[in-house]
Image (cartoon, rainbow, N blue to C red; front, side, top):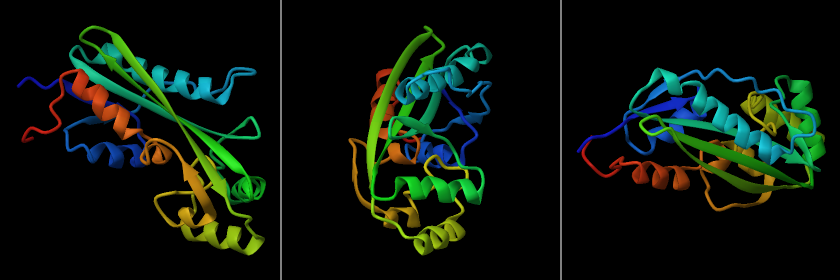
Length: 197
């Protein structure tokens, strides 16, 4: 059976590990995308736009491929939370999130370059944080150093201990790629996920 080429428009090791769970061959490539938010752009719209822009940015390089773009934007009190980048900013993010719910908009876009059809989805995950004290925050950040993660935590690691609950439809979405929707989208585009690779 013909299998279209799969391209992951991302250099994120987290998304690469997630896509590997589907046991299909794919090529990871860096997309060309300006990730600067537009003035007043809601977090959900930002995540959707960036996922689409990442996938579309590689579409002219592959004639018969499914290109996957994804982006995640965290939201606290209606405002986007970016990747902290530094220990100091991560401390501030976790102090602000303590005892509150943080929303995570994880968008995924599949561009089928055979037809230029675009398929999109956004998963919203609500992460409810425990009340965190200064010692917990400092100890956690030194343990995992999640400075490249929106919201300053890794839910697949020790970060799970910061929460009192998570609400979503797809547990893989919080890690950066909604695999339930993506697997259905890929199968709808002709990818046989259950064939011998």
